[in-house]
Image (cartoon, rainbow, N blue to C red; front, side, top):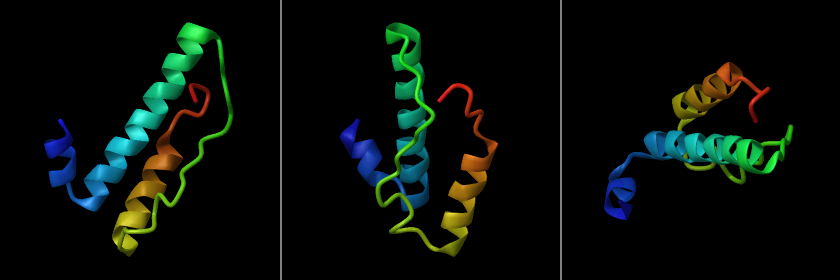
Length: 68
């Protein structure tokens, strides 16, 4: 699986990382009753070009924050 992740372009890798973070938050909420209104993205946009930054920002705006 690591080989597949390393082969992804920056934008696709960021989308995967964001999806995993949101999925983990949902899992913690379902299994442990832990809900948080905080999503930390450490250097999430650092290696993206301007169109990649806009794509990630658009994705974040579409998230349903009641599940995170």
